[in-house]
Figure 1 (spheres, rainbow, N blue to C red):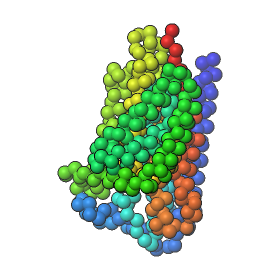
Figure 2: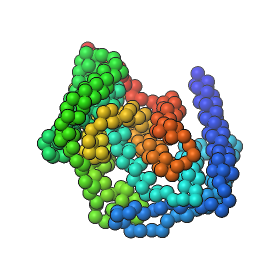
Figure 3: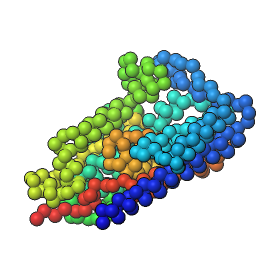
Figure 4: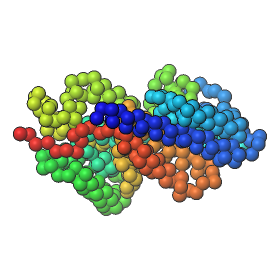
Length: 421
């Protein structure tokens, strides 16, 4: 049996190596034909590396020959594909895949900005901002699913918190009160999900769907009946950016990472705290044991049901903060269904990040980049249908889930109700 398993594993590894090699060669061919041959000789692309009004140290713009860049990128991808097919890169294969993806994207950006300019710092800034609610939603999913509860209700939590933040923030005339109200509503929805899933053992997918439908209906109704009539209740304002002295002056990354509003700094903090908490504390060990082997955890004295309740409520609070970002950190008002399915994209980021807070954050940046890129391309009037550009973040979600979900292993007890004997 062991010999059969080893042989099967070796066959799968060889097949995966060949598939990656073909992918690398396909990327090389696409870069060559689309961005190399498709660009006129002598055309240059300009990437602006400064953001006006940021106060960061200015550097010169990056100017590259569009066609030459595409040919060089295609040659590198083809070279990497040849090595991958002949002897492979072993455990570094996915790192090399990242290099190929970067070369493809950079060649595409150069082609899109040919004979004109693109503000690269602005693109990075927009990527980070658009990843904020996705990161909060993904972290909420990590907290819940690491304890064994599937949280499909992230979309409903984000939407309800966005509405609550705008309403309470406007009524109180205080953004912090609105943020706290949004977090409380997220926690209450998390508690409700916990009651349905843990106490009454309702199917967790159905329970989350109920919350999503309820949130969409109630916020749409109240928005039409209350916020549209009383405009002063839908004008909370936005948290201003806070520049961190010294760090915000760093060229390129300074204004992107260190000249943002409070939501982004909370996001940084939560990613680090949840990561360290899950993998380096007793609390995290108990949470992970409940998500993997609740029966074994129960026999050594871990309170399984209490741990799940606590994590689901914490996840709801985190999602509530992410929902408040839409109204208190981004646009400054509530619009019907303004989350637009980002709760489900956050779930994809959680899976792509393999139920790891840092991985979820990096995955959210990928989706945020796709969302930001479609806006930039529409401004540059790239000859790609606008409908396809608007679909970009959702297409990336489909591709990621289709390609990763079979390889990522969720917690063993995820979605399985536990009954104490």
